[in-house]
Image 1 (cartoon, rainbow, N blue to C red):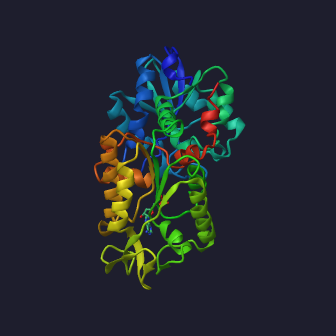
Image 2 (spheres, helix red, strand yellow; image 1 turned 45 degrees about the horizontal axis):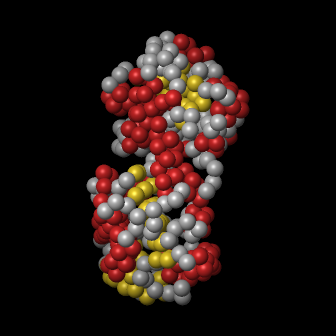
Image 3 (cartoon, protein in one colour; image 1 turned 120 degrees about the vertical axis):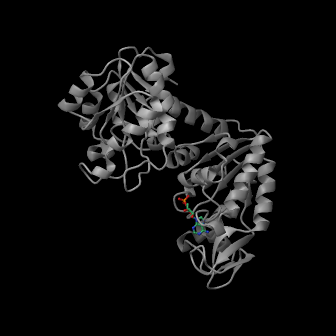
Length: 396
Ligand code: AMP
């Protein structure tokens, strides 16, 4: 990997694509700065080497043009405090004004450019826009794993303009290295835990994981479609009727490939989708009408935990239930605990996807798993075996 650690950056204008797409409250305060924290090693490395760090990112989903709530100026103070250096801001991300702001930078300086997605050309991967961005720097570094699965102007097209000066940032290379631990010669047994609301969006990863893992644990809302596929009564639980046949075929495929597919055997059910609902416990294939399954039950937790504790490589994407509500967080918490215990025993554990990462943080497991990925979609696509445009673009 052509990494920034291998190159002299002194006096260079280093254009760094980061993922500063952080959540903001209505007063524009950052509510979770993990993504900024994750990009710090690269930025620190650049400025410590005497480079001039020019930072590009997107924030939120602006339509086309400036929107106050999506301005990257809201992250300046936090970035300054974390880096302990004054951080400048350019109110544009291309053009004369930005070039002028850059020309005033000193070695070791940091300048954040305004939101790339204020230009619709960013998401379309427009070459002309990429060329304008490329004019801003001598060296291009991609450190935005969260958007590495997108062929956008700043993650993909731009790399063409730096044939000899394009590098992996430290976060991006760490993400890839950790995914490779799981994908290339994983220590066995290898267990994947996939949860979350729906099968849609995770079909490809489930299918491709069947070629790699020894155990595949399915939880969360998607488990009810599998329960229906097995002929169960699932009451008012979340179900994707158009995916029942697919769930059946995945059960058959797992058997044919010798993969142990573990589905929940029991379910915690509620008569309404809220924390004050009436709660009851049943087999997952026997949920009464008027109730919906919102968490896995104790029998499932015991079965899943046993397999997890015996595993040597573990991937987790997606919660086991509606962990945002106190009455339905137990399954996700207990599965998280089992992963932490297995990690303590020497297993390699990798967690990714916005909601599983939120769960890991909520339950205080952050330091007890081996690696937390900053990318949900990018992690899933990498696990599927897809080549990520943001990675291909900077490979030699
Ligand atoms: P995803 O984005 O697909 O990973 O889904 C995450 C969301 O799935 C979380 O917000 C959970 O609350 C939700 N979820 C998990 N289990 C269930 C369930 N049994 N019924 C409905 N939603 C669920």
